[in-house]
Figure 1 (cartoon, rainbow, N blue to C red):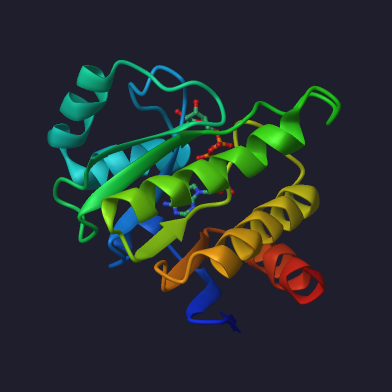
Figure 2 (figure 1 turned 90 degrees about the vertical axis):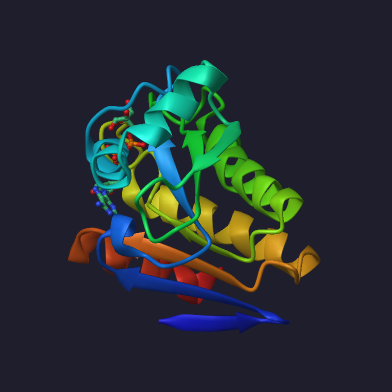
Length: 175
Ligand code: APR
């Protein structure tokens, strides 16, 4: 599913983030930037050791912020590592921190001249963020950013499970 927002395209697909050929992939990392399971594990496995080398030089990333490394062996030239909030009950700043992940990742992309970006569904796996609410925040934040930043020509959400794709498809209709 795709929507046109001015010069930019916002699309959602079902698939594997690590196989995307956008300029950058966004990783759902943890504050240590030392790798993990889920998307994080898949990106490091597919991208190779150069990504971790640069992550270790960076040293870490606070929740809600984003850091850039090489894409290593990935088709994508860059990986933007962002750290989502661990979901507690929604009243500990989780919505604001999740929105910040998307906004800070795109700000980094704009600063680097990156035009096409693929995102996973941040925080909705190990970090337990409820999918419906996370999808709404993700799409709303990206839509607001693209309205001001035509330099980003494509944002693609890559959902690993059909259930996630369906939630994002539903949310996209109402943002
Ligand atoms: N492509 C696209 N999406 C994927 C992939 C993949 N290859 N693998 C997993 N996902 C999906 C999950 O199904 C989930 O919907 O990405 C979403 C985010 O899940 P996680 O990877 O668990 O990320 P998150 O919930 O943000 O938790 C981050 O998990 O892997 C560790 O080091 C990471 O500690 C950090 C935590």
